[in-house]
Structure formats: structure tokens, C-alpha cells
Length: 339
Image (cartoon, rainbow, N blue to C red; front, side, top):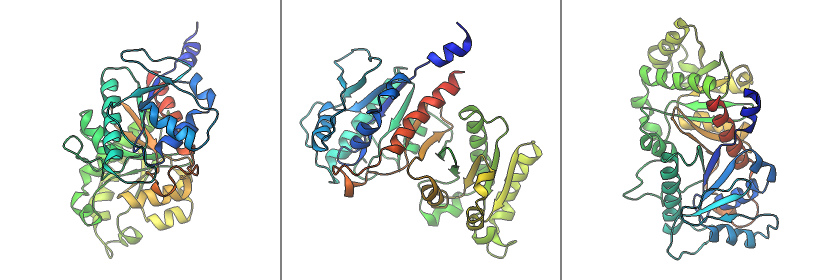
């Protein structure tokens, strides 16, 4: 058998955490994995509870959906959607409600998936949306999944990398208040984030000579210092460092003109300076199929690029495309890393 044939046969095991059981996570999981051909590309394991999936299947009147409820220590079955029950106590599913049950169940599912990942039982994890407030506890004190996975898997740093087929945007600073950005933004930080992006574009997406754009922090990228000096003192020196190494890193670009002129089409990756500077254009241009990928980890973690959406939970209105894309991207990255 040739190496190419062996590669085609590689089917990673992908864990999917159920997220907040009262949000749209269970619904988009059910809809996404109902695509039967997905089970030929990977072994899929949902971490949550079978009763949650059964509840939404009945509520939403979804006919073509089934799963295999795993018993204790039972191996995962290929060709089936496997479900791991992550808690024993009685619970109530209340779609659209922000409550402690949703946070408690989301954390239990996340902890079970991480334990299996550390035990090499799964190759990647796709996380359904959590409520960043109700999940907080003595065991989870993080702004979000990105920071949790970075610390849990002992990474020095990571990159929140929003990805789709047409657009890939990372952020230098993530879940921090807007007023704190200036004190966090340094030349070493930007260099670290650009390097993480370059590494990921090469290793995870197979782009041998990636071209990266770096956005400015201030309006008009500082207007030669008139509207701020961060571009001159921090961002440009970081960019020049990569140019001296022969990397294709350019900028800083004013973000409004950059996207207004559709300049994103000329680059493989874009580094924004803060959360909304990157996520607003990404969700405007790629919301339906966008994926949040945590680059820089030794493990693979993806998620849909939306939240719990309590306002439509349990109503059958949630679009599953972002979840589907997150699963397929996890499969693709596992295969790239397995080459």
C-alpha cells in the first residue's frame, strides 16, 4: 500500500464537547453530525449526555439522527456517533435559559474531553459554545476556551485564529478590556503572535511561504505618529524583524482601508491588534462557516465562531455550518500534522 493510500485511510478521533446545554450547541452538533459522510472521515465522540441529545432531537423533530451511548470503558465505535455521559446527577434542559446547570454541565463535558485527550484517546476536540459567566468556578477561572486550553496543555502562548476558506485572522490581544490593550501590546508580543501564525499556516494549513498582513492599532495606522506612536515604536519594528529573516510580513495597515479595499484577498493570514478589530470583519465576511482555531498548541482545538445564542435556542433556527466547518477543519489539521 502506498503512503498516499495510507494517508487517505487515516481517520482521526474527534471529540466534541456539548457546551452550554441550554444554548444552541446541542442543536448545531445534531445537525452537523447528521451528515452521514462525516463519519467516514473521522470517529466522532460527543462529550455531554445522551439525554440532552435525545431532548433536542424530540423537541426539534429531527428524524435522521442516532447515536451510540457508550458504556464505561467501552471503546469508541467507528461509523457511529459515540456519546459519553459526563455527569450522573439529575438535570433539566431549559433551552434559552442562562443558569448554573448549563455552566456545570459544560465544564463536566470539557473536563472529560481533556482527560481523554491527555490519555491520547482522541486526536482533537471541537468545543461547542459556553457561557463565559455561568461556567466560572474554582475549576474554571478563564476568560474563555482559548486561555483554558493554553494553560491546560502547558503552552507558553497561543493564537486565537479565526479561519475560513477565504479569510484567516488572528488577534494579538484576546479577551481583555479595551482599556488594557495598550499596556499589553509590546513588540515581543506581536513577534510571538506573528510567529505562531506563520508556524500554523505552514504546519496546519500547508502553506509553504505564507504572506501575512499586520494591522495598525490606531486610526489610519497612527498617521505617521499624529494619532498614536504604537505603529512607529512597536508594530513596525516587529514587522521589520520578520522581513530581515526573509518572511513575507507586511504592514502596518489601517484596518478600515485594508478591508474596505478587499486587501484581505492578497494575504494568507492577518494579525489584528485586538479582539473586535479582527472579529468584526471576520464575522461580517465569514460568519456562517467561520472557525475559531487555537493555534500554537500541541493539541488540535477548534470551535464554531458563534456563542450560545440563547435567544434562538430550541427553536430549530440555528445554522450548523460553522460547527460542521469546525469539525472538518479539526480533521484536516489532524491529517496535516500526521503527514
